[in-house]
Amino acid sequence: MAGSPRFLTLADVAEVLNTSSAQVYALVRRGDLPAIKIGGRGQWRVESAQLEDYIQRMYAETRTFVDEHPYEESETPVDS
Image (cartoon, rainbow, N blue to C red; front, side, top):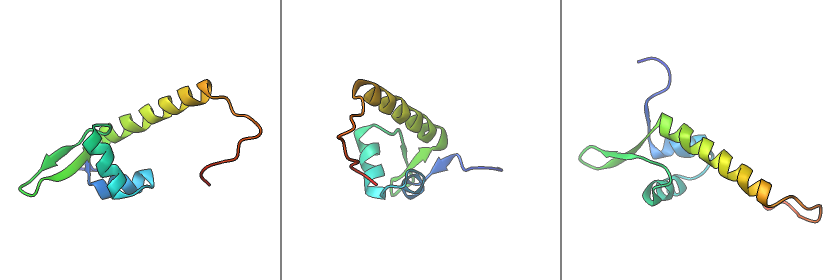
């Protein structure tokens, strides 16, 4: 099987999203990011296509937020 793996660990997803595994776990448990549990120890896996869909949804939600909350010159950035 060439190319990217079909399924990613929560650590892999955290690396792609540049966040923590705990944050990814929270996304999965809330149902925001679809995932499956596999094996006897119930390890979580996220399908690459589901991760891409999640990222696209977040772009769309961000666009909507920006459209509904125009930037004002007096604002200062929260994250750097």
